[in-house]
Image 1 (spheres, one colour):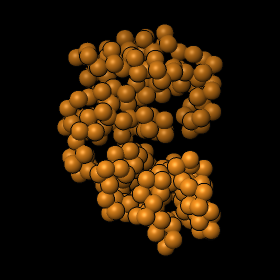
Image 2 (cartoon, one colour):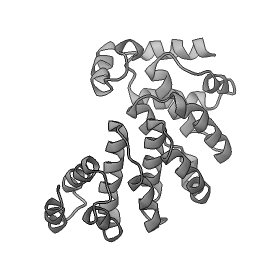
Image 3 (cartoon, one colour):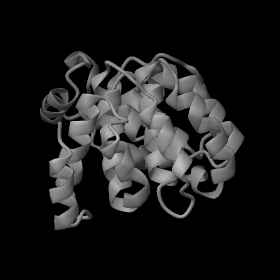
Length: 226
């Protein structure tokens, strides 16, 4: 099964695109990147998700190629049973080593299971593994800043203190998005200096770049920069 999937991936490889991707994910060796575009990987994932033997691929870790990891994330995103999805995520996350594979992991089953999902998020966010932490914050941002929002949810990302660039970028992205969606609940975190300095200033930068933030809000945020 593994060799069959690798053969399908090699058919789709694009070395020029691989060179481009390598610049976006500098911590991944160029030799591990085949250069397969996401729409092609999504199409392959949908096909493979209907095949029973695909479970062998999901259990066989670590993978050799970056593109296999991307496919792995997309396959998990297709799992329709919540418990099975969580199990597959927890098996895979320790092997995630870049932002792209992390961020494309977006299970559809999460939308219908917010109460169950919230019970899982804290252990992801407070994980010492940077991409597990990043994943947890991204899921909190994607699912809990709208109708199911609670002020207390903002505390979790604010309590993360990391030296990892891709963790801090996600925290800033989270709070910039929270400012756009839940301004009144979020702005005190900047007014009171609850975020690490780099995250604080990056949050302001990203929020001021957003079309969802008003001119007046952007000017006020500018005054809070440290």
